[in-house]
Image (cartoon, rainbow, N blue to C red; front, side):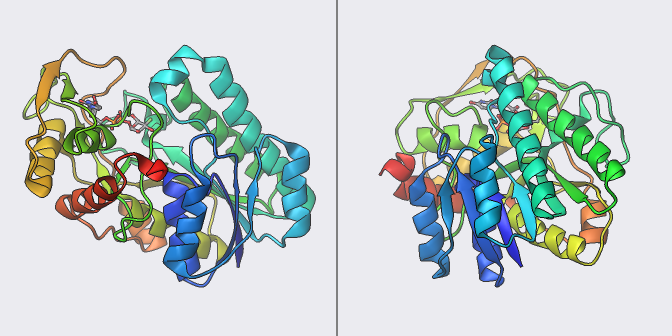
Length: 338
Ligand code: UFG
């Protein structure tokens, strides 16, 4: 099985690449390195001891994507490529709609030309909107997303449903990620946000390594047990393994559709900070701040469908996740740059 990973040098893409190579799949990576590093590609080779083609391309470039399909016999595409900063998407929505929709459409059109019919899409819990009850289940309707980024995910899901409906040979799995954190235990690959991190764990890690002074906790007056937001954090390796199971599922003729990828458990921001203090042995000073616009109080997955249909069993608990993230951040305080 030869799998094309668009955005394969990114955070989730690189961890998925390792799992696929370790299980004997062949891969091809396509990445424009706009929010990732070619060093990640070298690290994937180092961890797995395997080689593979890596194309420095923007997947909105149809000719470049065509060339990848011409030069490689691809069986399935896992589409990670896209812009993903929630706050930035509110500021420059047109760029998000243009890039994310164009990338998905270009890859799908080139797949069709090349006769490739299996697609796995990096979607997000944000597609549930804010009106569905917790925990989110795949049979609930998509809702109004709180950001243009989220809306691009919901729109691509809809495009895929329509495309699968029109073409019975196309099958697409939509993987709805909750909050992926952690890193490969080798400490060689991990999350490397550009600029000031938007997400909680990278921010905490930068405080722990001394790059930033203190964490700002956005809101302690939410209707949650300790007043801070509750999220469903999942180890990026567990997440990566779900992609492999999704490939196997499509290979045995599985039906198109969405799958939640979350642990099914929720932790508050305060609980995460406490666990990070324990794991790192660092004080991690934190200051309460007003709520961040658009943050829902609680986000938790029902992962029954992924467990039952894909056979996915998330295996890593919070302390292990944070310890793996810490190993990466400690050895790479400036990400792949050193
Ligand atoms: N938080 C802080 N301080 C920070 C960063 C985050 O208190 O410096 C809080 C947030 O307010 C939130 C929690 O930590 O309550 C988690 O925030 P993240 O930014 O890490 O994650 P989100 O749940 O906001 O975002 C995730 C994904 C998005 C996806 C979204 C769906 O990163 O891709 O869930 O709601 F769109």
